[in-house]
Length: 621
Image (cartoon, rainbow, N blue to C red; front, top):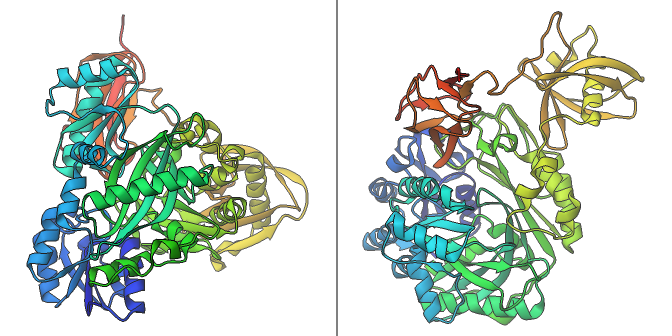
């Protein structure tokens, strides 16, 4: 085993790697950007070294800075985690050329699987079924649009070098193709430095099934069963589970054997994931799945595989990188129970899952389940990196048991003032269709209205009334960090929950969990966080929206394009400008027919959340 390990990553995966490395007495070295200096992984490593400014390209994506940090700290190995440089073949070669151990896939395998079009051609040659589509060299808009037309809408535009849900757009009709192609290319160039795309047939009832594979340098290659990652938003995973529900023994064998063939086709070494798209319209069948891509690294969702196999996949990585054979043969790997992972994001589901940034003034994560988190109370969620707060992992003897544990865990999450998807996670885990495994990648789109909470329910309003009734003329909040109460008697009272006023009942049978954070009383209820208070004299409720023509940025970010000028006539739905944050684009459109009035920003400007970026005036016809 190596003596020391530099982790070329951050947050929860850095902490995860540190935990295993320390258990086998490997000296751990963290590298961190200026924005991450106060995060837990920096303090938990045996040694830490600063590698540059907050921007990833000047720190975590800088090969030179990371290699300099490795030399400075006498590291003997580098683990790239996932994301950043984990699938960069040039970096892997540079690490090996520097005489260091690369805890990752061979550079040749990374290259072979790094481009979706080339990877699909390779898989076809290996007898692995691939999704029908266009993967040609002609990247002209005319050729791509023609292929989409011939294929039949809807289609998917996907970045050739893509991953993580970035550089991907669904197109439902020809008139939208050009705009979505341009957006996809911009995002692909920003995220991967490569704006080439491919076109795929869109699968109507898609399930996202992936297989964990592992190989060593002695020709051994095994799978550790499959994961179902179908619950997604914006093509990014939200809840994963293992095994995949509804997958029978025959189909499991066929798909897992195909994954092993795929890994062997590129002489793979280390941890990898073969991702398949399955048509679940008639159930999961051996002839209804197709290869999508291979992730030549450890995956974010690896904990569910660890839970059902009782294996430490990071330890397997370290052993293989050190030249040891796989710890187990295929027949020795057994599956036990069921596991779920829910990704807790700093985002607002009610605003299209836009990321939320700021200081975590209050953070309480679940107990009695596994929690992998990169932050703690008092840390900052910035716009520079992925907005994940934590991963909540629940394991049970069967799917029902594991899902019940996940639902209870998500209900106890408390995050403030940063917005989070905790309430959504709790509702999904309790949803009847999800519990019945009636899920595909469009689940959240179809169920959004019932799963995304924009208004408090009656029970939440009554809990707010109960909480505030006990407050009275005294102020217990200044002396207590948190208070759990039950109301003394039934009565109606006017309360503010969020931005609006409601009539609520003081209920002696209600248990309300409220915390005072700075000067705000926050009610935590089933994963949701509601600021509550009593109305003041002459109070007028705030009404937000674009009805007055004021266009505000829904998130902090960079204005990457402005498509109108002051005085322009616009129609409802016309694109005004595009804001990018965390490498995701959000297009702001005209709320009604009108004329562009004030336009105080330009392309290249940085904007804050809720900053006025344009004003649309209702014009005379």
